[in-house]
Length: 147
View 1 (cartoon, rainbow, N blue to C red):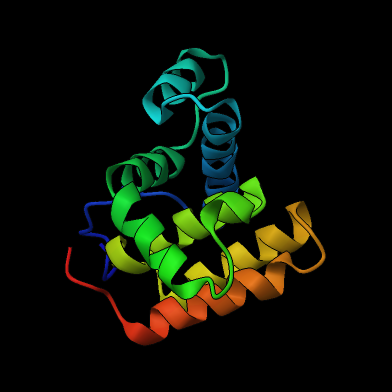
View 2 (tube, rainbow, N blue to C red):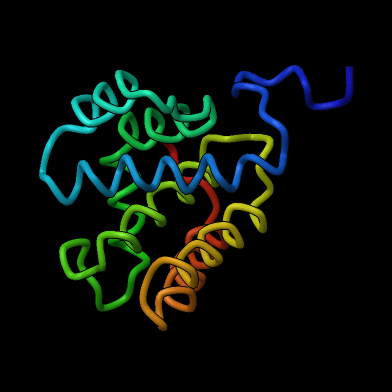
């Protein structure tokens, strides 16, 4: 067994975490867009033909569990922006990355930030990558707050 394999998070090949993050984003985006509870949207995805990867499920559940703390950190560090003004994709990428920064021990800070930035560049506005990088860098610099 390799070092770090004794973690609580589901075991997933490293390369597939990018796709798991994308799938978690899809679920959180749908819940946000439809203004429906995350567990309702997640249940619909679990009942579908294409099951979300285990890491995507862990991310969605972690964001849902910690949403108040996560949103407070985002709001505090997104200078001049409210959650409601942010594009839905950006808001949910930030939520996923903040959850990883605070609660997923085997994801290095740089990886959580880089993954969010890359997905933002791919799926959101031209300025989203820089915006997300700035917010996450400020959160990472401050360090984790007490739960």
